[in-house]
Image 1 (cartoon, rainbow, N blue to C red):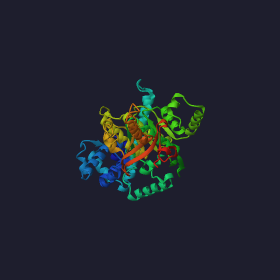
Image 2: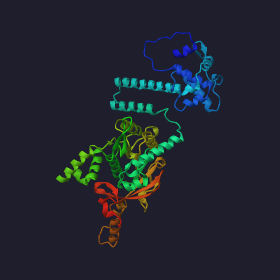
Image 3: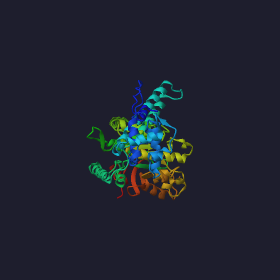
Image 4: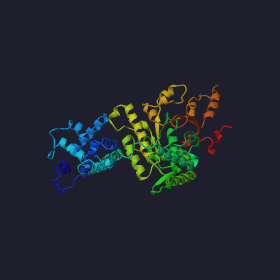
Length: 500
């Protein structure tokens, strides 16, 4: 039994005065809060959204707080009389029985006005004790680490525990007044008015897409899906680079930076290496074919363009993580770290089906995908950034005559459609028409095929199949496959595709 608890039970007793370092706690604050709850149950509601029984240092106080909470939630009154029947009658706290100790708590209770302050003090001390535990575990494991646990695994485990500690049970949440919500909405409108393009969200760099979506909205989960070969990675790469290249920081009053235009981008490339991704971006920017870059089949002028482009790109705040098979927990931890160290305004994940879950649902792929999409949505809200998550489509698309994708084609889980705020499909009819080319150019159907192919050549449709905050529909873009580049049809580089 804690000394401070005994002190309340035996007011005349001197402190024991330990010479060793004890875990930080404030038993008097725990006693004061419990007394306030026993006198006025409204005190419980002031702390119940962030304070849990585990946060109390004294085991008896944990039990009293838990019983009080259960009793109050059932619509009953928690008092010394109603609680004592659920506690051991023969238990003692110093010279007092437990019923007498409850009565002492109520008799020396503070006003309910102080309840939230005491609750926060108890919670903060619990966090400090948890930090000490994590630190002690880090030291002990580092000294006696098993052979199958490399240091990197220990670092990731410590980071996971620290982030869980930081994000669990915070007392800065809860309801906010409608006035505050209106003020935030007006601030967002003002920021949109000042931003290039007058968008409420972050510009993708593709104007026709921005016009339909208002840019990428913060905290939104945007699913970008398509069959292999449609160019979904190319579109995601284009958008990621456009946002990073347009980054324009603005200094805040506290000395921190906030993106006025563009933003800092984190790109999880689970399928391609960072070199392959960089090659695509360089190809798009320099208009030198990526296949030529890989083969080294380039002229001196092309090489000079590549060098100049690479020097310009070094200043672009685009960060690539090429870890394969990353779990949603690892991805979240690294995203939080990037936001803390460099800032973060947009995340791209390529792609959902290459990720793994963090729990025991790994043997059930549908449950695992549900866990991943739910985790991505929660991460977007937590970091207040849009997340573009790429997804494969099921093969049933190929068996239909009309190859245009539908929401029902999303692979492995309906949770992708359910959790997403926006669902975009990339569809290139050129891909399918090209495969229908007659083998013989003297075939009577060849001219008909040629006319159809010329009509769709170099174009792509981005189908907005779902959008919580705006209209659905189709945006027609230009696509140059040799440079893996999407752009507006009205872009001068693609004037040959404009409708006259």
